[in-house]
Length: 556
Image (cartoon, rainbow, N blue to C red; front, side, top):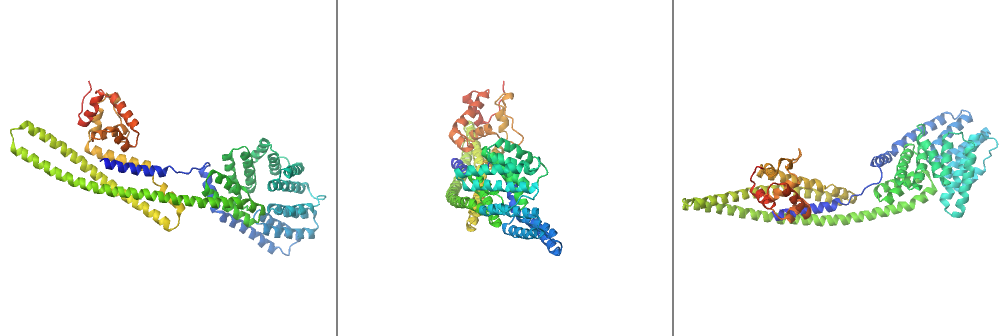
């Protein structure tokens, strides 16, 4: 019996050690799952966009003989689809717009085309070319809406230069220039419009007025009429405010919303996923970080955003290196766990041989006891008192034999289940090693639930014990006043207190052994026993002996 408990202890220790290494996540699992699902479906959203573009191209081919102005309008719609999706295609159509606008000799259309050209040049990180494009624009005969867009683009250009340059001397001048141009734009945007609130918030953010910036952007965030692209702009910028306030969970939540909106609108010119990948990397979530940086890199390459590629590459390399390190750590963990599984298997095999030997000895001893009892019965019928004592001893031995047989059968059943689990586990590990799927091994290892395994073993113990001693609980309660008796829950066979004295009933009296079997400290077992004895109307020193005798008493 002592060896049996030692095996259980080793089994519990192994799975306790492994179950302790669980990686948590600081953000909402539901939103992470939604983002990951959206990334996996990005091709579906892009197909919708490509079909929309193809329909516009079909319309353009059909209107080839229509007046130039109609062609300009259709080309402009195609450009709008491409401008945050693919730089090369957007550039091709903006060049066509410039030719068509020149043919029409319409200053507003020429300016709109130039602004479109400036937008994609800025989005691709071509700052010098953006300045040249903006400097070629004549604002003398264009409406205020285009002037506002012009000032906004120059403001954005200076902000991007400040972010890209990083030099303290130039950054101050860039931010000041950007603020001045945005002030000019805000004077032209209609009050209450999306552009007015957004660029007012952006200006305050870049100037360090976080509370004012937050108010503007929170107003937009609460609106229900925003497009997906507008929502991405608002949540991404609002995330920057919370990041500066060190409220990183809110910042990450908003960035995930921004990334989802970008993917659903097929916006490839974006930075939300890059920043999000950096956040997850710093939190130690390499798995999700790798997914996000890979998608951000694909978007930057597809769009042709030079500055984005320069920003992404260092983080991409860091994450790839970390993945390699994690794979090596997983391999070490696998070797460690394999060693302990092998040790457990060896222990089980040795114990099986020991049990087999004990069983043979038990059968031999039983035969001898029966022979001795028969000889004594035949030899001296007159020695009634001696015979009664021998019968009592024989009864106790038979009861002990029954207990041992029941628990040997119980162990062999548990042993068989353990062999099957270990064999299944080992096969799963071998299969993942053969398939070179090291990352899946941790998932297999973490599927073992120590708490459930231990609880199932204890329940099995309860069932076998109560099969041997069905009146144990009622006899135990007879040693207490009614208000101090133990009441079990509906799904309980025994609780911790009853299990302690059930082991004592079986002859296991050492506190150290009981603590080892039940998974508690020796002090905890001592405390439980003392608490129970103090409630009984029996003296403390007589309580355990009465439990071993299992005699029902009636309180005075």
